[in-house]
Length: 514
Ligand SMILES: CC(=O)SCCNC(=O)CCNC(=O)[C@H](O)C(C)(C)COP(=O)(O)OP(=O)(O)OC[C@H]1O[C@@H](n2cnc3c(N)ncnc32)[C@H](O)[C@@H]1OP(=O)(O)O
Ligand SMILES: CC(C)C(=O)C(=O)O
Ligand SMILES: [Mg+2]
Image 1 (cartoon, rainbow, N blue to C red):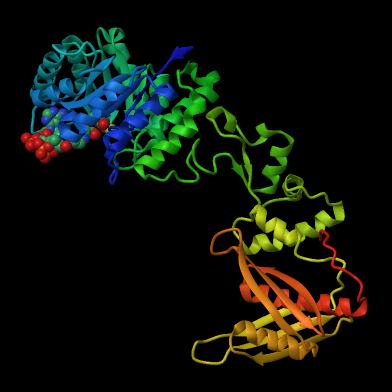
Image 2 (cartoon, rainbow, N blue to C red; image 1 turned 180 degrees about the vertical axis):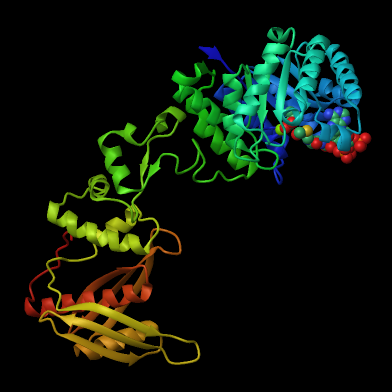
């Protein structure tokens, strides 16, 4: 299988992401991880940019042993001198020279004619040749450069001594067939092209960076440039993990491979995200948090039967432990039952159905149903405590300028629906006064506590109360995404237990599921 060289520019183009600034220590840490990932080439920075970057490139050059280290340079002697300085101590140094070739850049930015561009680039390559045996040359904005001029520039670069010619789609303007066509043309028309490597460098302005890189491979590119997590200037660069996994997953189609240690992908992604502060979107291909997560019932059912139904890549292959089945409102019984088993509950079919109905109610109110939510939900009720009272509705009116008022409606064991309103010192007090009036029970609230089950604004609130009546006390527990409702449920739960204790004084509470 054809080997595709991986040129990582996380530390150079990736660092050009607005807001990202990596210090020497951070660059070295990322470089070590890139070595573990097995990239062939590491572009460590732009030494002429600042003394700090020169020092950082030098530290990376000295640290890295198993990859070539590259410094970027304009086609100017002072930049080249800075790269010479920065790459001292590198085991396998390489300079990356660039000069824009497109009409827009020639006219407005460089204010140079075609022949001046050719001459300046050639002069720079020949100057660099005194110091480096490996030289990459990039005609910047190659994608928008006239194709015949690009062939001329490539021809000049080969004759001047470049060992790699990179074809940057600097502004992410290309589509795959156009970009592929450039490589095909260069391969067919430039004399001596077989002596050098052709490289692809794509940007993601139109979301086609990975597709364009793959099109380049199909048309003869030897090297792909990109970054981890696709970070980089503007919309970013080709995400290297995407290219590597596309080649690995569709080897049948591309017939090409990389020497990356794919199991290091997840770890490298996390490190780059942490040190650059650039959060990886949940739906990002390969390394997003949802890339191996399944929420919908039909998919979860398929996954439980056979993973390849909904996963084309195994999470283990990029160094993750497992796929995730996320319980939410789109989940089905198969995944729910699996989760119960995971959590250590053994329920019969009827209990699973009851629990599943409750879970769906909860999932309608809450975005992510966590393990803690399910445990709390399952253990909410003492099933063998008969419900003398059950909560039907609760309405609370609260303002910091008036007395809180609550209207509670409960159903009795006989099926009678009772409603009562009451005021109180606070919303919970009003709720409890209404329940007292409605049930005609005289109880003392001995304890009240509230805590959040799981995390987030929509977390379940769990209320515990202890009620006392004639020296007998009972505890109650209420669970809801609304803490006032949880408070009412806990109070009614405790009342039910008090009534039960009154009926059979020797009896002790026994917890059971559902
Ligand atoms: C597509 C890419 O990603 S290219 C890499 C982009 N990365 C960076 O620019 C990061 C590092 N850059 C820097 O720190 C600074 O821009 C420096 C140190 C390189 C230069 O700073 P300054 O001397 O202040 O120049 P400034 O950035 O304002 O302008 C760039 C100059 O370089 C010229 N230039 C641009 N590209 C090249 C090139 N490849 N070769 C030669 N000259 C170039 C521009 O025409 C402009 O020249 P002018 O001042 O004569 O008009
Ligand atoms: C320096 C060059 C290769 C670059 O980053 C670009 O053109 O996007
Ligand atoms: Mg770039």
